[in-house]
Image (cartoon, rainbow, N blue to C red; front, side, top):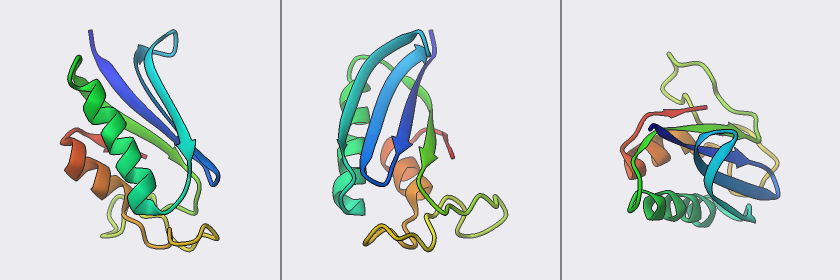
Length: 106
């Protein structure tokens, strides 16, 4: 069975899930959106904990923005000029790929 991670990254909270389908959610975590290091750190910790009992095939992200979605751009997957303090030019996709070593889509 393939398992996937998901993030709904909102301006006030992050929701992280792991499952094989929308009907088969195995784990979920919700926490406030603070600064990038703390918030993405909590997301990474959640997914690393889950990989102790199952293997993730990929991670999908829905995020507050604006987000650079141009795959040809060197800043693909970055949150660009946002009103959320500290998040401007945050390389969300790059951080999660490097930490989790799985495909990440946004």
